Image 1 (cartoon, one colour):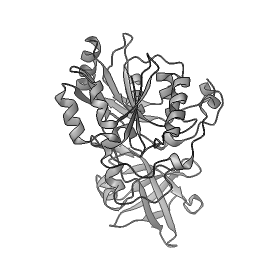
Image 2: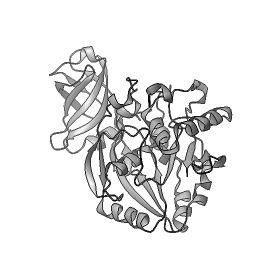
Image 3: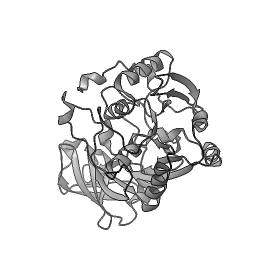
Image 4: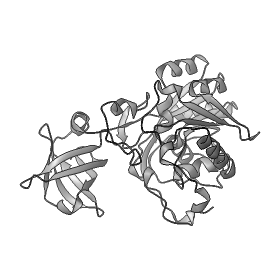
Length: 344
């Protein structure tokens, strides 16, 4: 497969700037891989496709308020610091992106609200820096108060207070992501109760989504593309529940491409999930044989994105692009705050 195989025209008007309310009232496009049928439903109807004994695997990563605005010592120049990942919790060391980068050098201090400041200790890329914060054990708590929601770059507006809740799934528990696992944004507690009452087990894993999710693929030959590494965790308990469903021929509904990548990273030779934690740079594109994912819940993704490549590997590129064409015609809403798709 080549990069250009995943090209389609996405009008700006199709990109959702805000989510629908309530969040489970989004449209749901249902794709049946066997019959090649496409149906339009409401997201609340996703539960109708689940049966007793099935499992639904979700990503419980939590988006932290990664955008900080501070002032450089002495000059008071305004600097944006975008937190990427915590490198060392004890020493409060983080990977960040700074803007404007030309003003930020090693040794500079940047001051924020509430007595929070950081010192630049290394350069990583042209805009990347390694910084040390002054509040050991308290950085997540501090940025929760003074930071801004890291909305995706294609949502062309400033973050608003409502985004703090809207850009967070109901299963979000563990700080670490700078982008939401967007397929999970459609679930409400009411819908989760409905799913549990059907005898479906909800199983958590973690994959902390990084900025790489928005990074464009810049090579036509997909074998030459390298994904950014992201941290993931699959507990023994979660692996056990998923394997029990697989061995009983029950369905494993996977919520989102991030969850899918965590599971497919950690499989055994006989197609089961092994408990694991670490970093994954797994890149899934056609052709690929999925070992654990049986049904996939996902959003509508950007042209030529690694996310579109993953869902194309799962459903078939022609079928996915046909579905996207229909979705655009029928005014579905695309990307993070948009509508959803269930691939059976």
